[in-house]
Image (cartoon, rainbow, N blue to C red):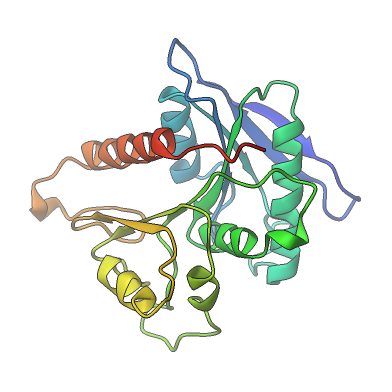
Length: 239
């Protein structure tokens, strides 16, 4: 499956690359997933392109994109407001793309990209012109830095979410495992509509140890099947 390259509109400092993955074959879940990359790699990283292709093969239209700092080949991510603005523009461009014909919108990403998606979901009043997402998907939510002190509050906005959210988390993730994510949300009232899908033995990118005897390709396929099934279950917003 070859993605269709395009550019997200913006000024010369913020125009960035994007790619569209369109479902092939008979299966079509009538859903668009705008998929953001993590802090250390762009939207054509093997994790990003393989998951985008796999989800498209399962009937989901996927758009990936670069954040501005990645486009400029800088190592340090932009500050959160810049990342959020770029994400909002990516969503707007994806929804309006001439090859996108879907009624359900999902936003999400890998690690930092997933965290930014939850920011957008928690503060929808900042982007009223864009359709309300039907759901959010975070692959490896970065709850806290490995072997480091937690910087900033990465939980409060999760507790404020009202949009169905799926967090896919490896049990060996050094940024926090599934139980740690659940514990961080345990005192939320009312409980946010967050489902945590645990990847047994998975690290931050869901890699499993060879000693586990598990086939790595099957692990990723199980995750992709679970995500597609979740997307299919989540109702549209009606907007």
